[in-house]
Image (cartoon, rainbow, N blue to C red; front, side, top):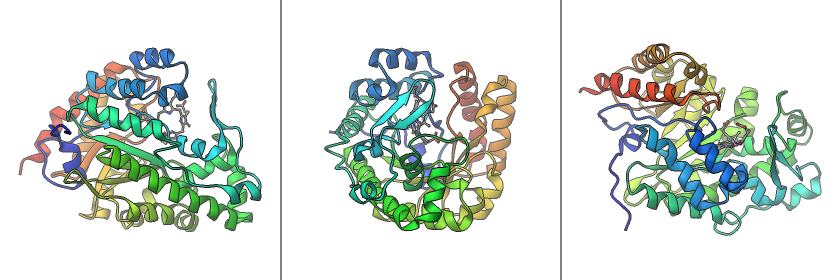
Length: 357
Ligand code: CP3
């Protein structure tokens, strides 16, 4: 028997149903800014070993909930487990971020690419979802996630992160759009199956992380990123355990294209901090909920400044449901945990006034 959900603010806000206060969670809420995370990661050996160990992944997923009154848990994993399961050989060079042993560079390798079976090659992720749901005992909902096909393809072709705009990937996009589309199509099949398997295993909402879609032109964004995210949204299981399973699409740098993103059929659009929350609400109207969008660097400032910024954001969104408070991107590893306490308290304290009917 699955436990009854005790706090459904997050799921309700995503569906724009009334709530008593604005729900919140933080992208990368389990991570290196928490000393207890660093201790568990050390025990696991490495970040990847931590992801692949369902018991330890469960432990770190719950760590931020022990400290803070957050309204959702997010599966502890990484977006790059999917290309790893496609045979690309993921590893993390110490202090240098993710790398692939076999990046996609030649046509033969690209033509051989296949979508993994989530309950086989990604079994450890599904086991983690099941174990986290048990451990949560209905305290808050569990978010599942995946990278968008375009964002995954950036790492798959480049073989690593990039500070200068993924030059190898962009070259393939322009010179061999047929090959690049093939990668995106196989990845779309993989991501759809992967998210549906997470939902079957117990994920109660899912988010697509399109970290690099915002580096494209509008035309290229539509053709190489949005088109595939729309296919995924259409292919997802949208109800489980008698409840809707909301879908959040987060394109970093996607502020110019909110209406287009809302048209994918998602329930909520994630915003980075460069878009004004109030303007965004006026643009999308009652089509979707909005998630975001505190600049993560605000958390380096003193609690009084954090509180002011929270008040400004809540006021910018205004009265009523449809807002999930979050950062505009992942929390920095250099954030002081006490500053997160101040953030969570400020949202709790000041958001209630925006939900009195
Ligand atoms: O939000 C959460 O708490 C869930 C866990 C999560 C992680 N990565 C854990 C992680 C999620 C949702 C991600 C998504 C992810 N991973 C994205 C999309 C979101 C974004 O941040 O733009 C991307 C691009 C990746 C790929 C990735 N993984 C990079 C570029 C890095 C290195 C960057 C860094 O911060 O060092 C990772 C590693 C990673 N993923 C860490 C964590 C907690 C740090 C690993 C460590 O402990 O050393």
